[in-house]
Image (cartoon, rainbow, N blue to C red; front, side, top):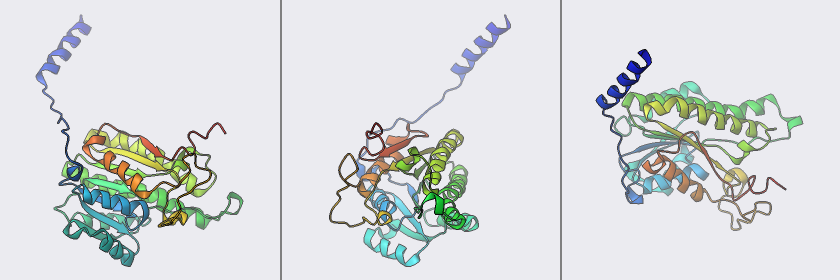
Length: 278
């Protein structure tokens, strides 16, 4: 009898509570991020810069960060974002600097940060048997520790503002390959962090996901502005363009990506996916 009463009470409560969830309406690509503020780490080149351009074109106000102020200013000139673009020198490996600079970022556009893209990253140099502790720490501090603490700082801003925000981590197809270098280990960690953040932050309306690019034509791989995109071992036959990664990023941080939660979407040209049987 007690169980029946509890079920009846539960049904009555459901009728009492009127929960309203906004329905996404189709909007032009140029307005996908209208009235949104995006903070992009590693935004002064490669994938980060391509994402900044896509976001500006979609109507967002954008803040790009990096460690080199001159490079940031040069990037800003290329992007031509005008009043909709700000630059901020920030070292993602320095937790105190991250906390201070994220708060500074909130002063640019009415105290808001609606979107975070963790794009800052470095690759490791050397084989497993030769990797030094300093090299290991350098890569992990930027790729993993940086992603963790920037996400923490920006999450606090989003929660404080009651913003239904998005966090997008740029990881790598290396996150699904055997991890025997600091770079691979760091990307495995970011993949796990993406799932953990998504689980923790979705009750606040904050959507967390990741993109895992394969070999991309950026300066990191000495392919930025290369005339030939040929890639002999990639099933698709070429390198990925930063603009292709940016197009996927735009979808994932817009309202169109609200129901993608805790996932890593890979854009690899088939590398590491269709070639697993070989």
